[in-house]
Image (tube, rainbow, N blue to C red; front, side, top):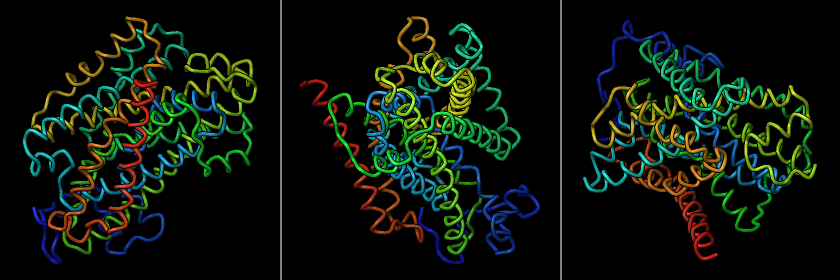
Length: 437
């Protein structure tokens, strides 16, 4: 598939009468008939769905453990990971807009078959690790908030996510609004937690920009934080969310749609970044500064919050965890479908994928494995898998024959290569310290 040529319709789009209200409003914004906030509203949705992957229960585990053990010192890792996420999600969204295909589909079309299958297997492993984190988070939230046994909480989480996914039958907008509402709820919870925990603003400002590398444990958590923040399945999914949402009919429309998409990504990723920072500085302020430096699991965090900040703060924490677990489970299932269909052209019924991805969590719950340690390990697995989609994304978005006017600028390609190198470097250090001591 070649890139867009000015005046050439890349693929047929439905008539204005057949488009949804959202697409109609987007067309009006492209033509300049909608101004200000009204212009960007129709484009809000894809980045907020992707952003849920950046505030899933895996983030709770790594951020709380990092904050309680090392205080404010690892906030810079959150900032770095969020900047990486902003760049990579923007490239992924742009890929879908320019080509009309998602990243796994392009891999299948342009890469050797053996490599496509290798990438598919690794991506499925990453999706499984993601689902473990999301399911365990929601299960823990239900268990601690309502006292529901873990095994039944897992079943309830599965049912809830399946019902939410069913909204997709009504079109893309209801599901987007539902996921965005969950994101706003999580954000509201952490605004409340910020007021209650009273963190040091000067410490937040300093450690958000000044890097600090400690010992083996801090490196493990740093890799976990990046793995929990820059998510492989979110990179795959975002290109799918934009590929046919508002179809550009020429170069000018493609550029305008991409500009609106970039604005939405900045809003959504900044919001997710604030929540991640809040998770860590809340743990630093409440746990680390009071001598509770060994809070290594979500259950202990909840139980310790109660005497330190009161039952209200602990309940708000669990509500945010529950909202995060359920919404990110929905997003994870969506990404799983995109990965399978894109790489190998094969789909399975939604309920079957939901059951399959639930199985590892059921096994972990039945075996009584520590949930939070499992969450942290799952995020390290994600970080190790992450270079694959990043390298593929860089390869395709720099190709003029595919991207047309939306081809990467040289600076974008250089920055994305630097992201991949940083992740690879951290992984090499982690593996060396883990096996060589």
